[in-house]
Image 1 (tube, rainbow, N blue to C red):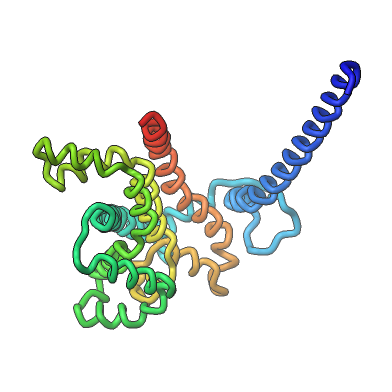
Image 2: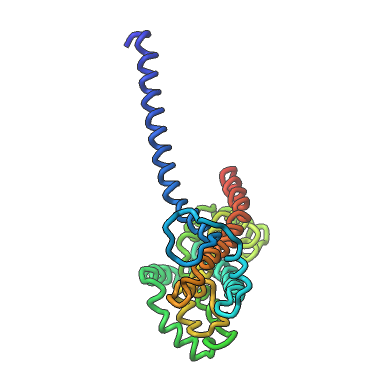
Length: 294
């Protein structure tokens, strides 16, 4: 290839790359539009002044805040504030307990060697192949035998259901702990640190990304769960969670009156998850930066 033809070849390659980049960005823009459209629709519906569940236009003909006001003030039929607080209490406590269980089990399986280690890992993997709701009937009758299915004890029952089996989901956290050199633990123990001190003061600060991932998943699970909450709460309206409340808003006797409030409730329950993610994102970035530097 002569020197004169080289710039032409470079321009052709550059042109192809530019065309590919444009196509890729167009595809990503279309996918992003498809992904965000339901979110835009639910937000617009939450401000819709026209009642009922069926409308002919995507954009509301009128906008109002009455749907949000009604959601938090009308407590005669569906007490959404009570449901919100029930869910928040259950999700927060379950998040703390589940995070501790999951990280403790993951660290133990990653760093310690004991007799039943491999059988436990194999059993946990087999149990993980079955969906959790297969055991909900058995769990309900166990909780009923313990007197945890009536009144305010339902909250405790749901916390137990959401957090007791958290240690079975150790695979991802264990895989992350395996990437941390054991020589760091050994050096700390030579200096007199106990296993607990190594776990809390060395391993945890080095594992911010996986800790944040565990916190997020442990909070979101109870926050959005419907199946176990419905089975355990049954007809105890005072102990309903937001998932049950939103489901009730779509029942035929409530849908025309509460449909726009359902949209408002869907927006409201997304706020704690978004706030938690935004708050913990900086710690995730700091953890990843520290890992790269290390």
